Image 1 (tube, helix red, strand yellow):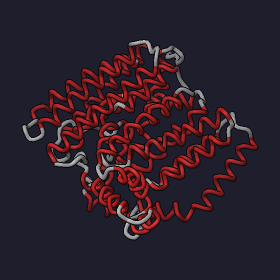
Image 2 (tube, rainbow, N blue to C red; image 1 turned 60 degrees about the vertical axis):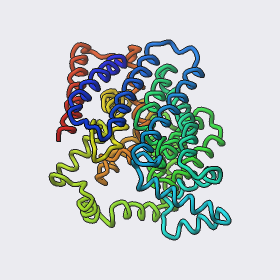
Image 3 (cartoon, helix red, strand yellow; image 1 turned 90 degrees about the vertical axis):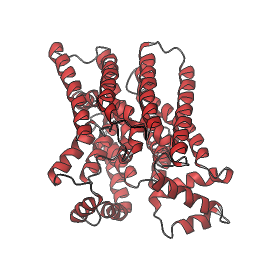
Image 4 (cartoon, rainbow, N blue to C red; image 1 turned 30 degrees about the vertical axis):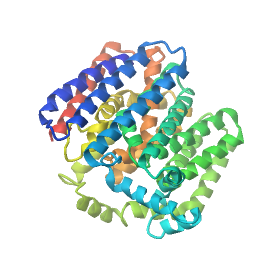
Length: 446
């Protein structure tokens, strides 16, 4: 099935680019060329890693580093060509982090710098300026952050591989990590001054060391998982809540967990909620702008509600279930073209992802429950907040989508999942692929 999805990806992406090529003008021609070339190279990387036997992972990792470095270099070049900066058409937030970090570096000490920052800023972006602070001590430029994100991507690749290797063959574990980490939308965030790359790494590391703890019972692994999870509080407060809820619920309903451990997990969960309950409720109040009415009013002002509230929620549900859905050509939001090719693949693997969800619960694969719960919790949260169309908001759970999707692909391609009606399933597969491509086309014609 993986080979078929890759073929569909090739044909569908060429088809979509040809259809919407009529929108291309000379205004952002380099962006269009880069978007198409990144698709070609990404497909070749998928094909080579899928078809060739993997004898040495170290050689493949070197290719990942070179690929990432070249993509970042080219995107920075394009950004500077059009905007005279390296913020990749994300000037608002990236420039804010940059200016705040520059100001902090000029202060006598880090403590004073943090106090000054918190006078007019919240803690949910503090993590990003703390990442920039030591880097800007060396060079006050976004370029050094891009260089740092090379190592962030390498850690993310390795951690995704480590997590996936708990559930599937080494080959598919490696493929899941490569398919995610070389996606155009992932490389795009490595090229900006935004916080998503580092935040996603922390999220992956939290799950990585949780699974290491489960396998080894080494308390150090649990401590490291808690440290990484706590650090995410400085980037997006709700993510650690989802992680704790996902792991806690998985432990409570797992048939393999002893009753004593379930009781301990429940007590720990209640203690955490009692301690952090007020903060959690305050965050919910902040996210909803004071309530549901405030949320709807805020989204209306932002222009996020189009065609009525029911239609808006339906679009957000669809976007989370299969997307975010890519925009092929856009001159209002140029940055969307940089991550088009990666999102097309993300849409296509929604098919094995949801089949994976089904079989995980059908076969009671308890060790995958935390990842699936985390994805579902964050999807539901984004849908409720009418943020389902925002790629930035969805980034923390997308790596888990790849892990679950490739878990199913691994089991199916090795014949470990028995389909009683194989011909009907094949027809269902092709119909699903066609529907997904039609949905992308419709989204771009709207």
